[in-house]
Length: 504
Image (cartoon, rainbow, N blue to C red):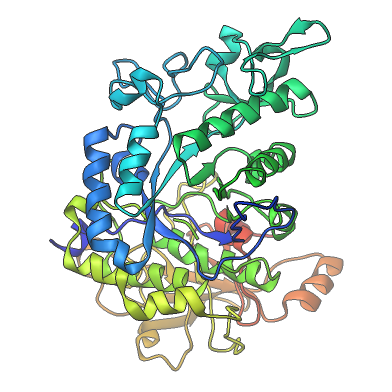
């Protein structure tokens, strides 16, 4: 198998872990910490939402035989396990969920036949446990829009019948907040009003059912980052803490998560994502370095989780990604198709040195303190304002990233000597690549360097904050600028937003 055909896929997310292992005989009021980050396998990257019972159990057996000896013990069925796999159904389709009489999602009985008998995931969980592994599922926020529209009654888990309060039976339309739909699957799920006892009763019935099925791990989506719902997180955490056995509680998705937001949930959950999804691209891998730097500086990083497809990263990029997650004590959730796991990918995710670092390293902060030898990669995309093409090949570093980027490096680096400079006038200097470029370019690409044209007040602020920064212009008309500085590194927010800006 070639590098690009390798099934090396993690769930492409960086998470922090705050482990809790509740006692079986004592109510836990504060999270306890386990000694190492969890490891396991997640179905999403290789199967999207269409995984069948046969495909799942095949994967479980392989994980048990090949990865369990290296600490991979959690087996997670990702989202839409309750979705009918029929014509017309897709990720955000409305009306294709399988729900019970209480509006709770249950596994698609066509893909998981045991669900027809009302057993949910119980049979699958028993088989996972029988192989010495732990079973996990992905769940969404609140209640499904389908259950809301059907206005199903709410289960009172104490009485075993419909929830009643103030002389009436409560239903989903009494608790659903339709204006608070999940950002990325708006026809799927909406928040519930946790200030109402009926709303809390519905959430309680959900998670008690998951516990009855034998679930050991819950990946809770659409309650963090852009979809933050601290009230639901708090209540779910309370329900899980009152169980007589531990269930790891993980939050997803991590888009726009800040250290302050992470601090708010760190005492409520075991793990939380600090990035959005990445799709095994070089740019996403590089951005994770910036994100983990920012969170480690805030002391909010300690340990990460990570469709029918193969990995797009080359072997060096796979090693880079795995190394970063080992350093950050990230929970390791492998997403590749383990039925096609080759020796190269297997060794990478079971490398004893990396796993040792992943489990026991400390003080995992960014170590580089030499700004003259550390530079960010500067990337950009074609802007809507300009018809000019943006320079997009990493000429100084070759194809190391296998993406299109301008890499800044120290002038002492031999490969950086392929540039030539020419003064066009007093303010503008032309920088062109003078070496051979191959067939991709008809003529050498050039950038232009000049001092920014700012008003006097802005110039003063500029000099105070970013002394020494230059603008690199990537178009003939010089309408867009790239900012670079040997003294200042891009924040994760700046990196994710791109580096082009209108010239002043």
